[in-house]
Image (cartoon, rainbow, N blue to C red; front, side, top):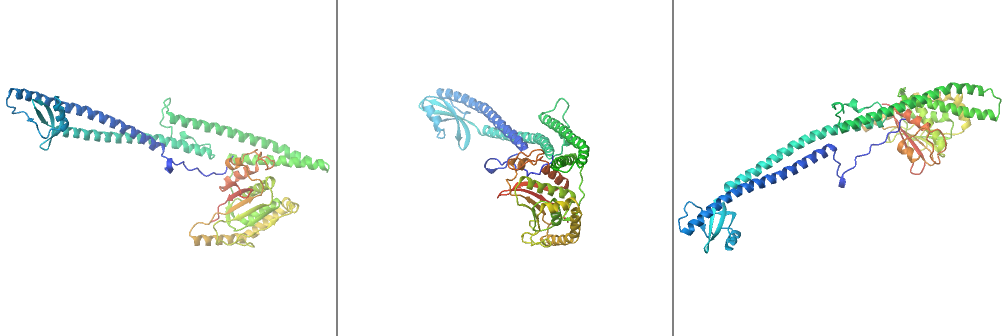
Length: 502
């Protein structure tokens, strides 16, 4: 069954109104963050290991020089060739304090403005210190840090690009699967993921999770399509098989003697005959083989003709008229079903309004005011108009529509063309609204659309649930929009948005 179009829900924003990231960027950012964390940890470990080894080697050499300088100091021998100093003023304070406690140690400091490695030990009442150049060691560690940082950046960039590439492939396949799912939801049961190439590169027996999801969706779509086709064939076969005997029974019932029994039998037989015809029409709509016969018509006259032919107490208001391109028979079928549904399940008054929202400069319909005051006629007297519809009234309605439309369509087309030229854009969209003042449409219908054989809404009467289903199907054939809403002050509203004639 074709359902009315529903607006697409916007994606939920992230925390504090931020837009949600796509799966592709989530994967890429996660891979990049993990790579950066691993690179940072490895960089720190490598830096510490190399620094410990390098600095330890310099400290070891300096301590060796300190031992030799102490031996020479004790024997009073010259310490030439060793960078030893007694009580140097530039010795770091923590190292000096350590020596005063009769301990030896080493520490990086400065000597004559240069970075050096100090080692010191007590020598009698003095401090004997030996220094070694440390600038080359410091520069080597800085070069090592630069190399580690550069390598980490290159690795993170390479991993991020690789992650983005892989995430893009996964996201593209998932997007294709989601697009196919949306097409299936919209009614395209022939759509398949495999046909879109999402699982084309997967080797048999080695499909990943995305390919498994795509295959499952294709399987569900195929199963659903088979079930719906079987249901359509069953409906069409049953309706077709019932049509012939019903026609014979209707003819035979006419031979019964006049009276209440005959009226009751004919009434039920006609209801069963209408149900059979509705089922046949639904099966044709479900098959997708219906094609519209489009032509230009004046919408106001077309609506008045359709409503008048039903013979029901319905008010028609033409606020602003328009020339539309449509199939007259199918639009008449839609309007009749909507009006009949309003009378059966709603409460009077039932009002059909023709308007062109936004066309403030368009010419009003002949005999009606452009400010929205009731324009067209109220159709009253069910017995009088029903006879016209079933016998010669159909010809009169058709003649009235053609005579009035011949001159009215040209006049309205000129008005809308002038309005479009003045506004610098396309003409506004003509709208037909059918409204009653009953309990309104149930929530299930508003959310899921009309369901065949579902008329269990409280307060909206009995029936087979096929009228609105047929209206939605015919609207889909015409390519026009049909929306079901409830009026703020009560009552059901069915709104048709048609295509204006250029």
